[in-house]
Image 1 (cartoon, rainbow, N blue to C red):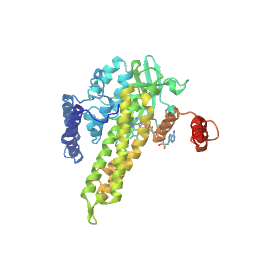
Image 2 (cartoon, rainbow, N blue to C red):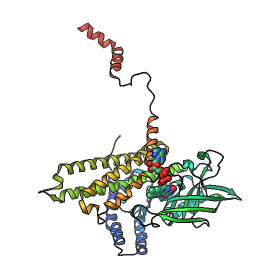
Image 3 (cartoon, rainbow, N blue to C red):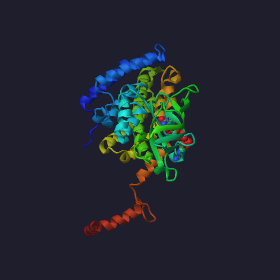
Image 4 (spheres, helix red, strand yellow):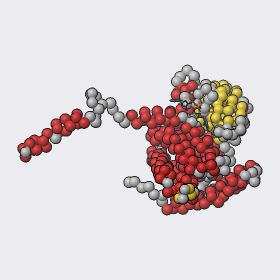
Length: 430
Ligand SMILES: Cc1cc2nc3c(=O)[nH]c(=O)nc-3n(C[C@H](O)[C@H](O)[C@H](O)COP(=O)(O)OP(=O)(O)OC[C@H]3O[C@@H](n4cnc5c(N)ncnc54)[C@H](O)[C@@H]3O)c2cc1C
């Protein structure tokens, strides 16, 4: 059965979220950006808003009840993120922010009871933050080229290596680190995942990278050197040698969540475009009456709708199969298409607003600067397109013979053989 409607009870919750973001979160962010309040005050109010969300039973509610959530799943999370994603801090206030959501998923999935108690519980409660430390300076798209090493010495893992672009590394209490534990086998069997408390001696942040026009040294993507970092044996996450499987779970969740939040940005652009087209007069008519503007609105609406439906359908498949490996193609397709749709849509909205559109007094230029990161973070688009193609091709067989299966004369010959009785009937009647 196909059903594209939101159930009324959940729509009520979405309406509440929408209002809460508009009344409480967006104005708070505006005060911070105007420097009318300092960061400490902002964070204090943020904590209070988190509590309101918890009181309304909407905290991290995509997670299962065993993890303190309501088990809403990914489709409902997608619908929530279509609202939350329009604000930088709303996902965090609802317990649905990157990179914590993906990290929570792997801790829940692969963590021991002790790890869940020590790391997952405070993460879920929003008391600590986490980061995912996988990419290395010499190679991000190819994890088989990583060199960070973990050795088991006297019941402790000792980690040495270098990671960069660890988002949120500066604020995180725990880092999830991927390191080689057995260099004598293929990296697919010899790489493991660890939970590293950031205050462990030897975890040294070299500096933070920003994106776009953030000043050098500022930003939220840490370059970290792991220098003789000793962690207890028990901090191995999952089975030794299974980091690649864990990474797939981690990154698949992260990728689809980014896409869900990006749908919110696409909607912001579409809404702004429509409003502007109806408000701005030029040469005796509103922009909305110009055919080229109508074409832009039609194209953006269609792109947003197509992308949103692909995201929702992928979320639905995750809920249905409860197994990311069965939704690999869909998530890779979403991930590859995301930066393209985002950049095109933001650019069109920015352009339609003219000078004020490209200025620093509307959000488009900042959004546009952030969009290319979506084509790099969690793997570049090319790699995801390869995955889509490989998965699609798995469902096909080569076709023998000179002519492609659609060759019209060949099909006519086949039809003559198959329906010979019909031809005979035709001849008899002639
Ligand atoms: C904003 C942001 C946040 C990030 N957060 C994190 C994080 O929290 N944790 C973490 O571990 N990492 C993080 N990363 C790093 C990210 O995962 C890597 O940047 C990404 O995997 C690409 O690796 P790279 O930068 O080394 O690029 P490279 O591997 O050098 O790739 C560069 C380019 O080469 C081309 N290319 C590469 N491989 C192929 C291929 N197979 N086929 C065709 N072309 C190819 C593509 O054009 C690609 O864009 C983040 C990155 C950004 C930008």
